[in-house]
Image 1 (cartoon, each protein chain N blue to C red):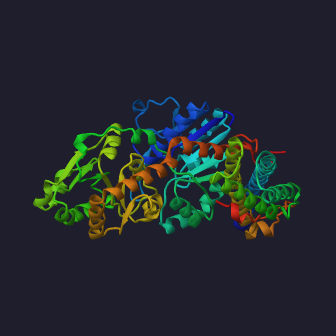
Image 2: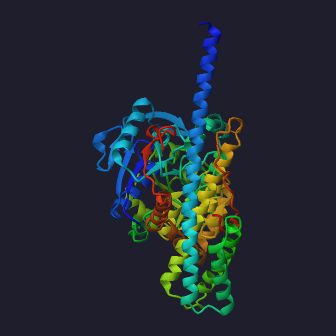
Length: 386
Length: 168
């Protein structure tokens, strides 16, 4: 593919951690490595904390509640004129807008620009009413996108339901090598350790389901342990729990990227008991590429990521007895565990950045094939053309 | 000037603005359909050319070779109405090549095989993008205002091709 000038727009604050930001950072750096020119327009709350020289500040984001958590987004006339300026001065071949269907910088850029536009939809939501209400406003803007990417089948079906449009499914990428080659750390490993990772205080992460099942598991496997990684108040959880189980549970706090890879590689079984609200489950693919057997709740996102249980074990969502059954049978059956892990590692290769970024590049290629470039739509009204 | 004329004028201005908004929106969509079709068309042409090259450079059995080369030729020659049917036949017969490449019964330069799977993916994606543009255009064109004021002008209604086997 020829080298092009790409403009990317980030809807959320660049310096707040999040899946979209991580995805964009990895993608931008991959594309720059391939020799493309990349500029990212993003809201930034604290400019000093941003080190990437390809990021352009669009202003301070504001916090609004969205989809069960708080999103830091930016819009308004000033942001809009900054976006226009950025588009006009960037001389882009293509704009890649992330999450263009929520009120954000991406939406502003999409409505201001014309030409090859690619949109990536990350979120899957079932809140129909809210979308219906703003649908008529969004429709003329979203239909400008030349090509749409959904990060999961679930995000794709959300798009189908709400906007009546289809999308190409390209999953989020991960650095598979990092997980496959991670070091095994003894602290995280024992024969019957079960790993859990995430913001465990949020009920939808499902830690409670796992802890409830531990009572049953410990009856069958006396030395079963649960290792919990992630930020949060561990004392509050420990206080609630049956004292006999306390010593089986260990909190190891927030992990760095390398520690995380080692954690996923070291534990014999990783459990994702999330009760809902997931679109894809990138943590599953990370655990899979580390070569670890995975157990997950059978919510739609996980079911499709684990290929209906082909490459990882599933249990009935929110059913701790069923989870206990699956954990016990897997801990006892090393053959099956190895088989799942091998299948999982092979299947997770398709989430590797190399593969994913190539697919994204071919979408770009498709979008720019018409030979147009990105312009401001205000310069391009139909009466001033021709 | 009394209030009524003022309101009427205002209504006319608003309706006029709305109509011009719809017209430019539709114009943009027509443009999108044209470019997405041009892209798809060029990929389809490339695929047909590749199919003929595969026939020439592999040890395909005569029946399959015959099937592929005739479907490639008819896909290249097909007019706009027969196009999707002809292309679907070609996709089907190219699947035969990919299947027999998987069980190693086929001698084919590996770069051709890579190129084939590459172009197959691109065709799928281009179809998806094109159908998307066609559907959006048809949806907008069915709006009452657009039909009433004939905002589509003389632009032909985009054809919805049926590429069942190739959709994503």
